[in-house]
Length: 148
Image (tube, rainbow, N blue to C red):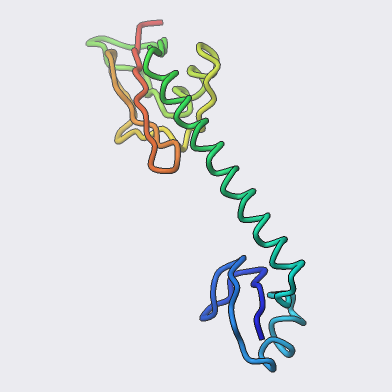
């Protein structure tokens, strides 16, 4: 019996996949637990439309990520911070502060989890931070930490 999986099933396949299973397995396990539906013409058409919609959404997200990378090229984020003698900051500048400053100064919304910082910034200066925007697309944020 041919069925379309509604969820990932271990040992069978991933969600949205068309698989061929025994009649008993489909009738007694997959269908009652709503893990799959019978592969009728209507269900196959629905599956194809969902796949097309998923691909379109993925393309739109990829385009948005590329657009953000282009915007980041001309941005120099200025973050004021308090410091003691020798230019050493009280505390540190974190990815959360960089994300908030990007939003406030340039209107670019990047989640703090997407900004890669090896170590928090603990001194004045200019830094280049990498942003992983998904779909193997990454950009660079230029950050200047100045005295408040």
